[in-house]
Length: 180
Image 1 (cartoon, one colour):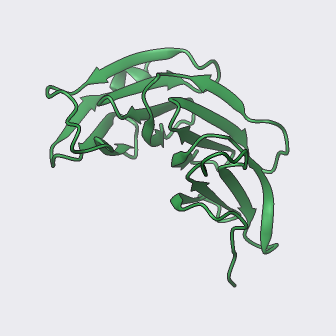
Image 2: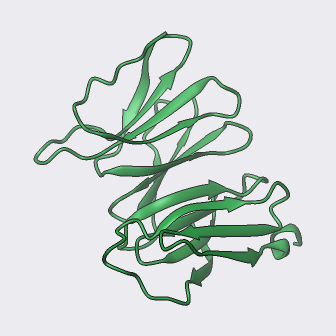
Image 3: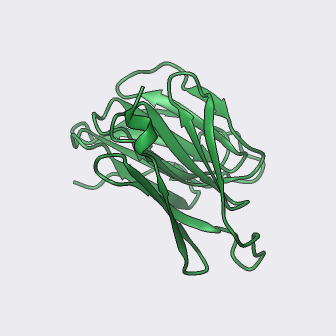
């Protein structure tokens, strides 16, 4: 099976839902175009289920239960869409700095977003409330526009790691998220 995106923009991110039903595709915003930048495909129907977003979508992440798709945009916002829904996704304005990576906490209650200004933000998915801001020891380097390449929670959600373009990484203790 081959799926083809109808847009002519470069594909920047791909993410299968954990249940294998959906493939999310994030594309660059074409100059002067009002085309959607996040496409969600039902992998069994050979076509897009829905699309949304108007800014470059460099980061995508699915919740462990495949219910939620988060798309990180270059305008610093995250769009959160419910799988299988045609409703407009919820917009969470986090930062003026582009989102470079995303990861859901295993519980599905929290989302970590990495930004071009070398900050990692942790927020509650339901409300968009920011819980923590993590900053790297070194300031952003203009030679590396994607300063954080990846963020990842461990399988239990007790730690969060960020991998920086310069070859360094940080790990933070997230065990407090497990306690009410």
